Figure 1 (cartoon, rainbow, N blue to C red):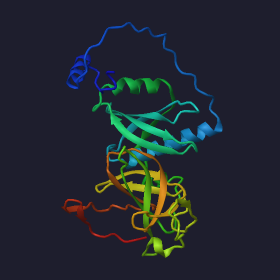
Figure 2: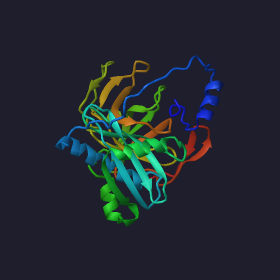
Figure 3: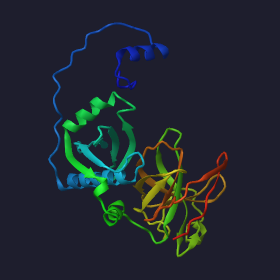
Figure 4: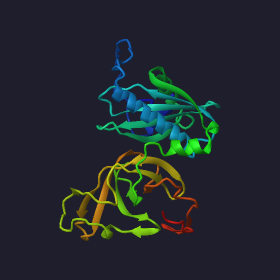
Length: 296
């Protein structure tokens, strides 16, 4: 219960319970069997590929996520079972700061990253981090300062899938939290912008149907941005099309790897360039201006 309320101090937990209206019911004795480490499956080629993908994405996040400055880090990937929906990664800086990152693994073994928790912000998670390290299937030291520009560029766009039309997606957070899908608004090629209407799409389907369209084929990688900064890189599935029941407008949608970020809205760009070279200037609420950047 202490960890659920995110506090390791039992007295603080009691105060929080009182403030929420909980009342003492009765005292009971609970007996726990001796704790044992879980049994994990052998490392098959499939599991090895998953671990390698997580490792690459972690190293990528150390270079790109603004919460991590250049320096030396030690990363740990907690072992996991074949029927687990994900695992945890522990990141330690040379200065002793520790983060826990949620890692999602879907049914097709694709990797998605969730929120990063700092043990400075949530002290009770320090115990969890130490437990994850004990059953780590991978431990590695990474120095992001030692990577040359060429090597860094290669690492950032590893295993990417860049479409010639560089599709752009947008998404708002679901009312229950998180992001699972996004809408394609268009793309750019040879300094020209392409709308959905520039492509051969169905015109009479109010039901979602998978489509084969040059604008977005599926499996593209998107660099995700908030209005202020780059966040992460994710992969999208094959698109579905339908007419909006509300206004009969074309809707081209892609399902995404699980994404849990502290933003209500994001823009994703399928490209290998910096899509936010200049930050936005807020004119008024939800109205921004920015110097335009050249299309690809």
